[in-house]
Amino acid sequence: MQHDAAERRNNIAPIPFEADAPILKIIGELPRELNGVLYRNGPNPQFDSPGAHWFVGDGMLHAFHLENGRASYRNRWVRTPKWLAEHDAGRALFGGFGRKLPDAPADLTDGGVANTNIIFHAGKLLALEEAHLPTEIEPGTLATRGYHDYQGRVAGSFTAHPKIDPVTGELVFFGYNAAGPLTPALSYGSIDASGKATRFERFEAPYASMVHDFIVTANHVLFPILPITGSMERAMSGRPPYAWEPDKGAYVGVMKRSGTAKDIVWFRGEACYVFHIMNAWEDDNRIIADVMQFEEAPLFPHPDGRPTDPEKSRARHCRWTFDLSGNTDRFQQTYLDDLTGEFPRIDDRHAGLKNRHGWYACANPKRPVFGALSGIVHVDGNGRRLGHYLLPAGDTISEPVFVERSKDAAEGDGWLLAVIWRAWENRSDLAVFNATDVEAGPVALVQLGHRVPDGFHGNWVGAQ
Image (cartoon, one colour):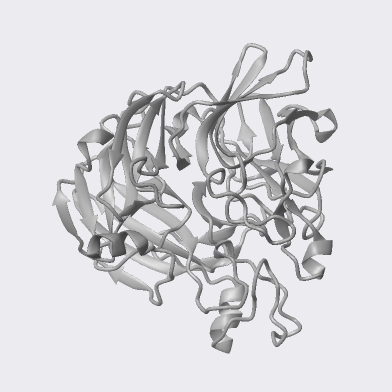
């Protein structure tokens, strides 16, 4: 009975405190080459609010600082305008997706939560979500410095999944709802390696969609418009602002990075949903993209409020193939594995180029619990499993982040860092795996005295 109870508990609820842990207990031995900080971001609501979706909880940053075999930890809420206003009021002022509560101050308009990702580019640490500009964070202290708009050259929504070109250092980004909430406009832009905005433009997509991630190769950018649709009409009538409408079909717009939005070619595919891209590359006259594809969207209902089918609302490693020769406007979708998984990562030195290694968090195929990710799978460049590690029953794992052993190490030579929730003890460990031998289990565990709630994304920033 106790065993089943541990499996049924989850790690979604927020923690109500900020903390510093200067010296953490380590089981095993931390590799001495790991010198830097793993930053993670995720929703951690300051206050309960009616109708709130997990996706819109206030962002909390978790920083694990590793140096010479020692580890420390710090967490801080991102002090967005919303967080500050609610902190001063002592209560929630926003409900669902940016919806103000009736008794909220009239002049409060910014519902940004900065809760999805955290990246380091051009000397700046940036907390990201997909409806607002990046929020600059002070490394080390995790103090919030405020929105960063690239000298006024970028405006509106900014994806939580920009891509950094490993060759040029350029950051490529997009934004959806670019003409306002629940609109079909997308923005697209780039920031050079020095942090200067070099491009920013807008265009219309086939329909208003929640576009969480996009695809970048050496010479192309691809925009997936998939049928989690946005509707202001629904929102105004009290129905779901975002809903699953498979009859709209799947579109992917392909644009040359050297071109403009006028050059976009739209490909069609079977209705599906994808939150996350593993990687993509060019192969002669084709573009290959490896994604985690759902047959039906999870976490969002049909327009009438009915839930989607849980059996179809699970992601699997899938390959999309685009023929650029003009012979067809359909793209192929081929599942590479039947294993439920999410949060795919690669060795980022191969982003947009052909990769030979990939990793993602996976479910336990023998004890599937809806939404629970409880292992890591290592795959080759064609999705074939090279290694597989499963946690004890009830425990869950975050996105695995790859860290190379050194700047010139071979692809895949390094470690995976992932945060594990220990269901029995209701606390978390930072686990360090040998990236090419995940089956051996963690080489080191950094033990926290509290739990890190299930979050979204993180990145490693080496000692500067």
